[in-house]
Length: 170
Image (cartoon, rainbow, N blue to C red; front, side):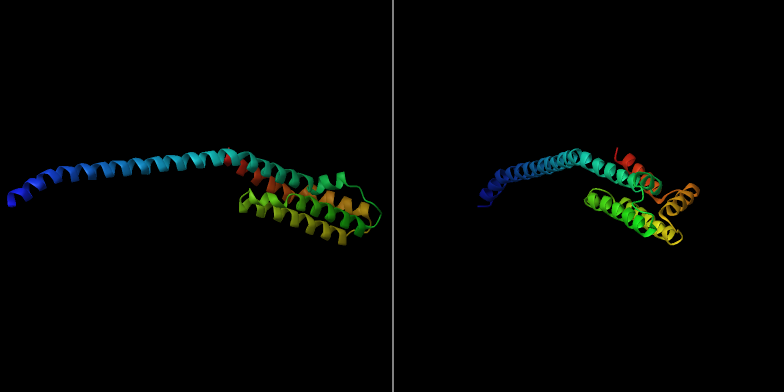
């Protein structure tokens, strides 16, 4: 009886060893294959999402350029001699541009979106401040142009950050 058990064990042991080796090799092969597939999918997703992200950065850069205080004053003339009317027109234009580009925040980093939002708010606040100190719409325009000839507009800071981030994507 012992002899039969030993003979059975002698036949079963190589089968078990072969089975375990096959299991571990097959398992390793599956893990490697799954990891390769994941890497391929990530590369594919990045390849497909890069143009969308770049377009979002382009649109935000264009937004910053369009709400640059100097450029917006040159593009939008006063509708009357009243400072209040002109201020409302400028703020409405900035808010309209912003709302048009609001969805771009999905595709950009939080840092970039914060910079764009901060630039927009800084421009509006500066326009309001200058409007309080101005008697006419033309005087308001002059005050803004003089102020921003001395300092860098906040939109330029946002543009610099956008360009920096795009370089890291490419």
